[in-house]
Length: 120
Length: 113
Image (cartoon, rainbow over all chains, first blue to last red):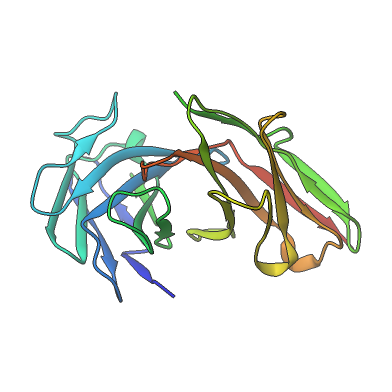
């Protein structure tokens, strides 16, 4: 089956620093990837859609200058949390669709294992 | 706009008992419906999905769900709970032709030995 790898699994950083999270589709190509944020004991909130070779599409209320997304290849998307603050501490999860027509809802979303970010 | 409501943030069942996790959705177009499971500190794994066709969908680990359009529901069931079923379960919906998923708030399933 399709595998999505996310790295790192956990990161602790000081306030004001930037953190980069990588999301890779290991055995398939993904022109689109999705980034979610999950607060403790809550659901996943879609942050942005990462598009290979073009700008990411951000959901309402998500600061694009705070959460920089780069989708430089068909297998890699990165999320950089810039000037991180304690309120950015969260569980970040990426997903990539596979198995159907590009852009179609019949695609199954394959999820990475998530990155737990703790900002001190 | 789509939305998903999962009734019961916590459900506890005895090992061997029936598991029933409830999901109701709201969508202006025919929905695609999904159930995902999340184990602690892990990503999400697809349990099953409904797109078109048969309304009773069978998934992995003995789970199944039935799409009931008249009730706008997609409840998840398993006849006999196992200890390994303890996890967080999310119901999700997407529009036809749209890859974006809208998730419910999740239901934490606890299995009592």
